[in-house]
Length: 403
Image (cartoon, rainbow, N blue to C red; front, side, top):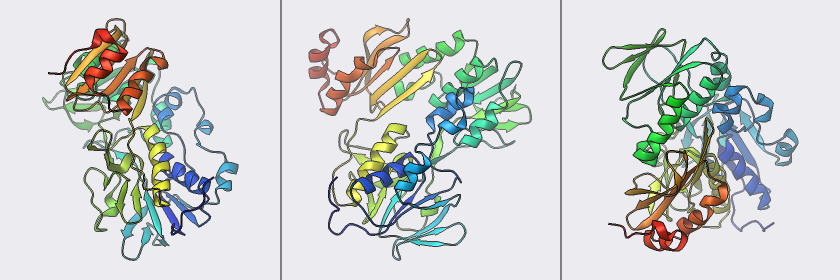
């Protein structure tokens, strides 16, 4: 283990008992930080894993006891001062304090903001969302044969929940305002493949369907049509949890705005879903809601808080399980100029797709392919390879000059 950096903060406060927050705490201790670490979380439980909520927990394959990220003994070894079940209410940069919802003031020398996101909601009758363990358990109780579920939003979360619910015998109506689900993220051709999988499994997928409100017994569309269901799941994206930072002096714009080191101000860093930082690998600002990024960014900000000053420049990775499809992706796919299939077949739902932005290879996505298939492409993305060099070297038949 490395020695503590001279001048490192004595008291570190981590707001967010999340994967990012836990990774930060562990990295501080591994880096021989012996000062106080206070972990604040609005849920009463210790940090747990969220990706299984829309899959293993929702399906009933896992018991909730499998979710915690660490055992009680592991957490005790970190010697954390915890404030669980209590929200951060306000930040004072001048006095270096975090005020909690019960009025307690928690002082800090170094602060890590890892407060994550909360689901967007629709007006009208309260509906299900899927962010916490309680959310997943409540929705699971409404699934099963003979029941009807309306899912609003065919993004990755809505698609995963749809596949699980339909697999349990629930009749699912999946509503998506765009003509092709996920086209903005993965391209129209790939989006159509994912959509067709739902149709093949009996899901009532309706694109171009704009929901205006949740009503008793379903949802209302903008044309006045009511789509009926016994339960409604709203999966239309999320909002960063930054309300408590209002008036603090920090810059907030779809997340906590940070530099390439994930610093938002001297001694203040952002990590995980809430952080919008400048990623030097792609030379752009991004906010990533992926489990892997949360852990990696939590580790990075802890090291930088202790003085490392290393830019955080990852090629983001995410995965999704839908029906019998395993989807894996590296890089930054949004805003791409071209998608090219270089292996496999869209028709067979087994393929590798490359994403070009400008003259660079910026992303790769695979469906139903072995993990090793995309590793060379991941390395090329990390190495900032040009489109022409990457395709001609790794897959000559895919080569071609970018327009």
